[in-house]
Length: 346
Image 1 (cartoon, rainbow, N blue to C red):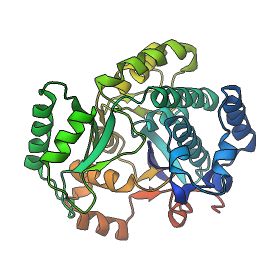
Image 2 (image 1 turned 120 degrees about the horizontal axis):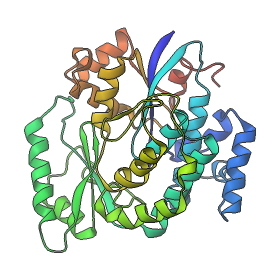
Image 3 (image 1 turned 135 degrees about the horizontal axis):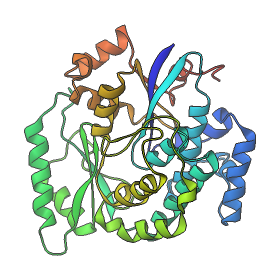
Image 4 (image 1 turned 90 degrees about the horizontal axis):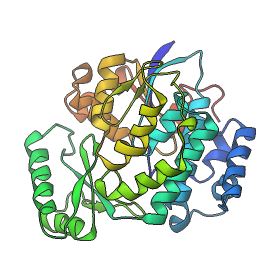
């Protein structure tokens, strides 16, 4: 049996290739029906209908109120599909909204209450849609760390944020990528100041607000008003949050967990790089398992492990060699990989 840290993905991971993911892989029809009932009660389209649509619609499926619910369900379904005889989960973390999924996977909420949290916060953010996000790399194609380049980009970001009517901040520290968030003036100023790279960066993220910045303070307040402490429980598994802090079972209060989830986690930088560094060094797992949907988080996980100097890796070549000889990363969104950690993969 191998030990594993599970990583729950965030927004932007349910795309056209993932249409039908719940139909193919969700293991509990009764639980999905309860999620659908909660959506119906809120006047929202059911997950079954969204996932079963004839065609993927960017304007529909990527909306915060729909995407958050779809991603939460797909992630939880994959977690529930893990083969307990092949894998022993020793810790759970997530990226951005993946924190809500991580709460449920670790037992810090029930599946139904976790869904309520994710669906509510996704809906509140969609309704407000304050600001936006863009992505820009600070590592090259070789994934060799370049701290000076990262420092220069963060300095540029900080300078832009001092300009009148410009808002810009680090939203997510995502391995070799910086996810920046702000208002239109701040985002445009950064886009104008940096050279295009890899044919796609700087890249705006559609239907994304200025997550994990002070601009989300109104959404945090609404979430705190809508989601009571009774939704939270002591986790059954260690949880690593967006600061790299470990929430050990029985060692924290549910009030503190709620305060972080609906406070700091909404309005401050989410540092996935730090979360994975803590996960690697604290738990030293045999595997890092990224649940579905999608497989876009794999690169950032590998880059974060390189930054943590995990198993002596210092570049993309080192990671690829490690994956070939003794794989450490499994992406459940890739069907050939999910079979390594599930029973009866379809």
